Length: 432
Ligand code: C2O
Ligand code: CU
Image (cartoon, rainbow, N blue to C red; front, side, top):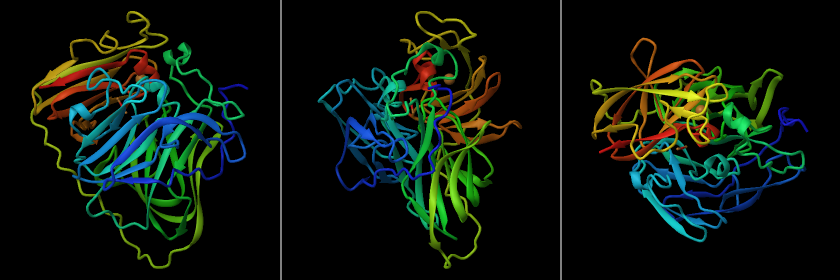
């Protein structure tokens, strides 16, 4: 089989585990080997890794501002650690081996406890050999609920990912093949969205939380059968909802949509060969009760307002197939330096506003993720744009960001194309 060709897409429903872990319980996440139906029902099941018997792992839902404690038990035969992507939490709960914690060894456990300050759509994933453990399935949704949620009939989560599969459902073990690492990264030949709910009614207003958990794939997305707006990106409400045409999500990025259902619903990824179906949502009846009304913005979060930047750093992405090596096996680098060095890329005082110019001097796009903070993308006119935790910088482009580093600790800054991260495109900053 030619792996560059997509396996046929599946116009079936792949459901997220129905088990939801709420904050009132003592939450246990068991990292373990699981069997998952990734290919369409009837095709082979896939041996993967996951949590509590499922892949994706169960949804964790917590109220904004409420402490949550999650005991991660490692039942794998290798170490692991879990990162709560996008949550502005205490550094020692960030889940990054070496930088913020020791590895959780097999048969060991660790309790993560934090207070999520911002409502929105987040996710959790392994942060140890993550190019492999995430590709094997160590992912799950993490939803922080608003005190007053928007007025919708359904709140639906969609976990997007892709995998390199054989036709019998076997996951191929090519997580670090050098050609992929030096190019766009490990890409699957089968992609899909797992949904938390199989059906809606025509006339329903739904919130759709899209989470790109793929290791390397950028998902362009179109939603058919609905009309509506994008109301949040990376968990952060937009000041004004934005019209929904095409949504593009780099690895780890999220978008919250609020849409009205007008017909059969489906989520597609446009490709050169035409649309590739990621998920269908069945229509089951009609909602005649809902009154027409405008989609309202979500309540913005109280992030600190940037001051005049006191430092302006340049982070240049380098390397790849065309870019040479940066010492050892490293193929990718920031500013000629690969991997976590003893010295941080930047040192900031708590509360300092910093401007960073991210220059993509490579032939591939990169989605750069900063831990523990959200930052503003600087818009073309110089104004503060969207708040994000992961920013997509196209090949040959650059992007300025402005960040108030108000969260003390050691924070990773890395490409979330996980093949690039393992290939060296990762560093860290220190906030004292
Ligand atoms: Cu989503 Cu460093 O992680
Ligand atoms: Cu990259």
